Structures are given as structure tokens and as C-alpha cells.
Amino acid sequence: MLLVRLPLVNHTGAPGTESGASLLHDALWAHAGPQHALEHVRVRPLPQGMSVALFVRAENDDQAREKARALLATVLGTGAARHYSLGPLIPN
Image 1 (tube, helix red, strand yellow):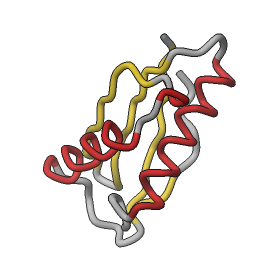
Image 2 (cartoon, one colour):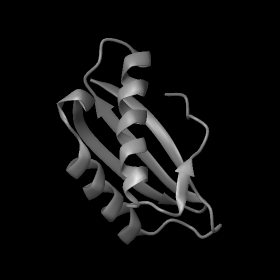
Image 3 (cartoon, helix red, strand yellow):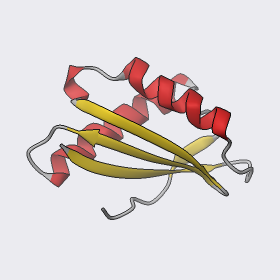
């Protein structure tokens, strides 16, 4: 199991909220399929958006990042986090 940390930046400049983090957490689980190999999710509000930590089964960091980014892209595409976009990757 490998950790991938993905920051989400809010387009409106508003800070993340606990309720928004909870909704995003649920959306990630709802859209996770076997191809994502998701094992654990943690979402925390930040002053400029959200911090998403996904633990996925993968053989290496590149595969883990690919699976995590694919899942997050799917969730962002549904409008579940419509005010957010993926920020620069955070090193583990």
C-alpha cells in the first residue's frame, strides 16, 4: 500500500470546510473501482482548498500516483468538487 498526497486548490479562493471534505471523501469511495486499488482515504480542509491522501495498492510510486490521479479526475469530472482543481503534487 502506497500513499499519494494530492492537493486540491479552490478556484474561488475560499478555504476548504469539514463538510466539503466529508463530501469529497464519500465521493472518492463511491467512484473507486477495482482499477484504482483504493484502500484508505483521508481528506482534510486547508486554507486554500483540500488535502487528499489516498492509499492504494501498487507496485511502485508511479503506478500509485497514476491510480490516485485517475480516481480524483473521475470525481472532479462528476462535479462533486466543482470549485476545485488539482494542484501541484506533494512529495511523500
